[in-house]
Length: 235
Image 1 (cartoon, rainbow, N blue to C red):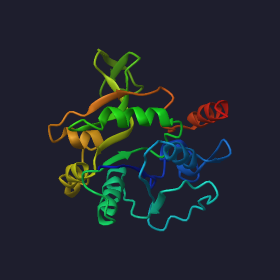
Image 2: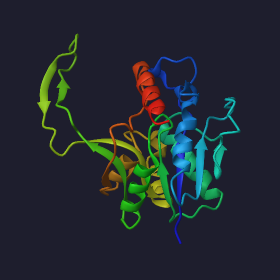
Image 3: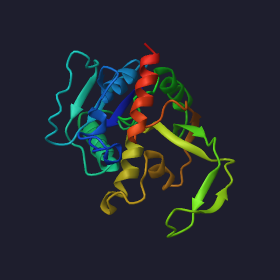
């Protein structure tokens, strides 16, 4: 029987967030942001294990009292998100996780994800030949920028029909995702912006599962206040 696991790359420095320490470790609504992420994922029914991929030498003081069962820290993070995911998948395979098991890769900074959304992804993808990801149909008008314009100016308007904003988790068979990333490892994972893009490179078409607008990635300084307000509204 196949199982499903989550992998959380947690080795980034969050340079756009404007924080002194990596943004996933910033205090938010009473605890480090990443702990909200782990605790939400730990509530998904049937989860077999969770793998938190940190940088070698990571010295963050992880709060033991709130640490969820079945989750482990693995210090094999890389220089990029894709490298951290690839190294994490390698660690999972080396530990005996089956290549046919499902792995759900989720951003540490998407701390507002809710268990029901993740479960909806699992149910939608569990019988799918490829796997899939949470995403949102693009709600806004999309513009392209005129090249080399300063200040930035519009070049054109892009039709938004059929356009989706990719979120996480992104759910694929462990062995298939590992193989897809292995093919581009020698290039430094050039062109790989998320797990779905690695699968698309092989000609596969991941399933799009509608997510929630609240499942945004905390990226810029103003995002922290919004995330804090949403988290506190849930208590």
